[in-house]
Length: 140
Ligand SMILES: [Zn+2]
Image (cartoon, rainbow, N blue to C red):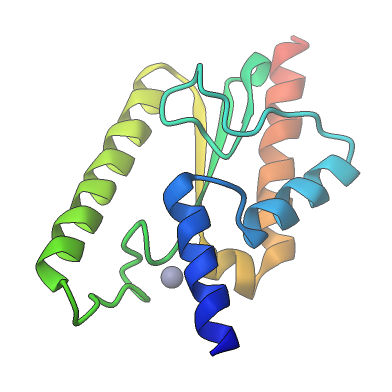
């Protein structure tokens, strides 16, 4: 019962686009490294989970359910038609967002929830790598 309730509140948070545990954890680790960034900047397309405008860097942390992870997404048995369409739209939108940033010459990083859970340090390492890279490019 308790678990169901907490799952539901996680889902509600995801629906509202508010902070999930994994987002909080990633942001905290980056903040501790001294990186300063915006979260869910609405002036940027798709309001990225993490963004540093001056480095043209955006990071998306994709929930395995909401973004249709090819490994973990399972179509719910109830209302499956609804969920199928909804998640398909999300996947299309993610592709559009990615295309937008690529075309505009931004660096876009996407991580699956399962990558963050399975190898958190690697995710932080990759983001840090790109922050440092953009930082050194901007100093040229
Ligand atoms: Zn996954």
